Amino acid sequence: MERELALEIVRVTEVAALASAPWMGRGDKNSADEAATLAMRAMFDSVSVNGTVVIGEGEMDEAPMLYIGEKVGSTEAPEVDVAVDPLEGTVIVAKGLNNALSVIAVADKGNLLHAPDMYMEKLAVGPALVGKLSIEDPVDVTLRKAAKALGKRMADLTVMILDRDRHESIIKTLRKTGVRIKFLSDGDVAGAMAPAFPEAGIDLYLGSGGAPEGVLAAAALSCLGGELQGRLMPANADEFERCKAMGIENPYQVLTMQDMIGTDDVIFAATGVTPGEILGGVRYLADERAETHSIVMRAKTKTIRYIKSLHYLPNKEVLHKVRQVQSSGHPEDRRAAAVESAVVKKQPAAAKQEQTQSS
Image 1 (cartoon, rainbow, N blue to C red):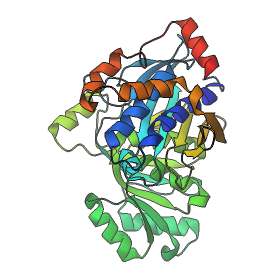
Image 2: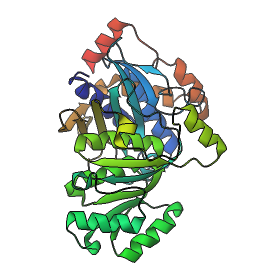
Image 3: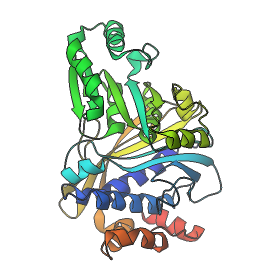
């Protein structure tokens, strides 16, 4: 992949974050997600790749855009796999909480796991614990190994986990061992990334969350020198067969970084929608401007760029089109209409070049 692609991708997460941020605290997670998805899909038409969505908003018959198998980008090459979460943390935005992100990962074709939409058990760590823990160990054993490897007392370990009823048993073990716990209300990708950022103060991330989010987090951790181990959790026979249909012969196998993102290059970009441990959120300023905070990383070089951008909102054509779509009709009617909208239609090459220059 060309290194210039990293900066093109971050422009896409920026506009998705800008589109969803106005919905913060309004209690409408679906409209927030819709805004991010519309904006991200539109902006992809200016990106110089021949991309196929392998992790997106759902199957073709479930999502009007950014569906699994959809082609995105403005050129015939290079061919890449694309994993997206236009708004990771829809409930976070609806409630005005922290750690909502707009996220994209891009890898050479055939490298990203086609993760089915189900739960995945996860163990995520930063560089200091890479190769030293196993998701197959009981939680208390994992904690003892982590404390020894880090040279810490058990009481000085901090574990992050989603605050969910399904984690009751894990939480009881954490309490019994005396480690500190930092609960997440939502935001699985940001949570799994946190151990790789010393300033976050998180030693490891445990528990189950979405499998697609697991692949996105694995892409981020590959750039950060961290590690994510995963194991799918099919809830019934249909989900088991779905795994096999997507090429996962043994749905219960431990998934390594290589299984999830391959061994070639990966580019990861995220823009904060609401503030969090890793990135600031969208901030509205005077004179119709907004500030965004993004991170863009590449696994091959381990380069990490933090980007603070100032946007003059009247010049963001994509945002105007998103507002037009969202102001027309009822939310349930807009899904079908969005496919035919100018927001998501493919454009001729000349038009795409003009959009790239004006953005």
